[in-house]
Image 1 (tube, helix red, strand yellow):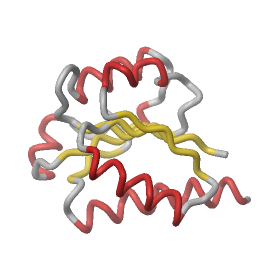
Image 2 (image 1 turned 90 degrees about the horizontal axis):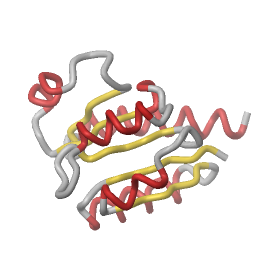
Image 3 (image 1 turned 45 degrees about the vertical axis):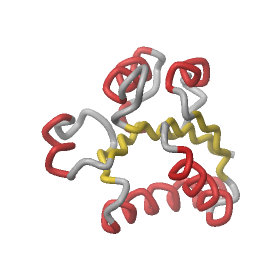
Image 4 (image 1 turned 120 degrees about the vertical axis):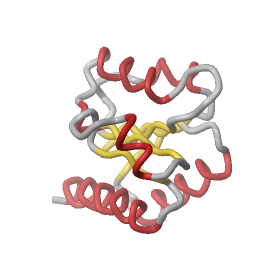
Amino acid sequence: MRRILIIDDDPLFLQALEQTIAEDYPSLEVVSHTDPLKALRDINDDVDLLLIDLEMPGMDGTKLLHYARSQGISKSRIIILSGREAEDLHRIFPMGTCLAVLNKHEARQKEVLRMVLQSMETRCRG
C-alpha cells in the first residue's frame, strides 16, 4: 500500500480530496492534517507522496517542503497545492524544486494530480 500525506488547512478541501482518493484509488492510504505543526511527526521517508498547501497558518508550504527534504523525502514525491495562479506558483517554486506545483481549483491542474494518483494505484496493483 502506498502512503499519501496531505497537509492543508482547508478542512472542506481536505475532506473532498480524501473522499476522492478513498473512492477512486482504494490501494492508497491517506493520512491528513489541517495543522502543519502537528503534521511534522508524520513527515518521514515512509511517505510515498506528500501534498502540501502553500499558505497555512503556523508554517507555510515552503518551510514544510524544506523540512520534508531534510527528513529524506525526495523532491519527486512532493506536490505543492495552492489557490494561487499557476504562473505565481512557478515563480515561487522553479522547475525541479518538487514534482509539481498545482492550483487546486483549476481542472487541468487537478488532472495532473489524478495522473499521479492513478500511477501510484497502478503500481500498487501491479
